[in-house]
Image 1: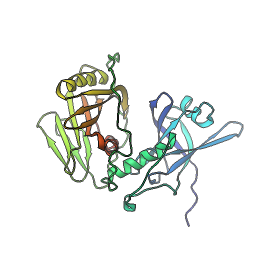
Image 2: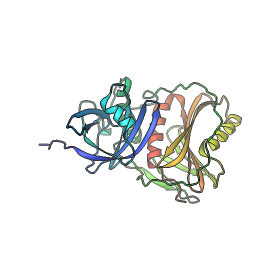
Image 3: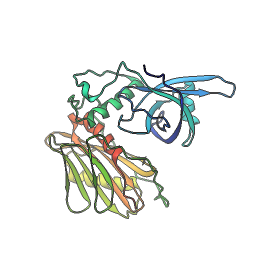
Image 4: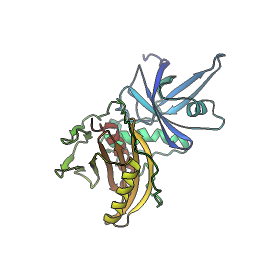
Length: 322
């Protein structure tokens, strides 16, 4: 007989704005249990007078991530819990949580398929964990592009106004290596990234390394620069200009500042033509001595699985130590 889940005190280790009204909260759990894709956690708030409010939020992180979870929360104007999370909660705060909960909509690799996934609104977050779980399991369902909308409108990239940081302090967030994946360490910089089964590591002997899927044209490309004298957005803006001169039909979709494990970063998303439409998402990270750009390139029709793989690569990535 399973014992009932108990409330525990989780610590907020990171808060990432996704949109003006959506944030992702990373919570470290003292009594972590591995969840199944599709499950959720309850959050309970207690006021000084004893009044309590409780809401449920789907888990957005992969089941392979140990000791912590990610919950992505939309702020609702009349939401007692969501407004507190968005407007009051800061890194280092603690909140009551209970989970993982739910067994009606869950998936594990041994269950196989086929499956039809339909969701709307914030319930889509339940599919994020599902999508990543499928991708790191080698996509046994042939997920392809069904999980994530792939068409992105073109946009004009704005000039960067971000100052170069004088102090860079990375966090100690542990990497997540999915079961069966190997770990590649770059001999020049020391960065690490997990490599899926059946993928090949190819280096040009310089700053570029590619992880190539032997069963599809999808690849992960990693480039680095030594001692860049610009912030990540400026470096990625220069990369976008270079892509425009190298790639047919280059169409930028977004360039925005970000953070990665406490380090300043930038996200560049774009499409281009190479026999058909290709889709790429590039994360540029500034470390004390390097700018490292990690980009997934996949056919636009395979973008759902490609995006999920990129999330798994990001979770496994360890930036250069110096």
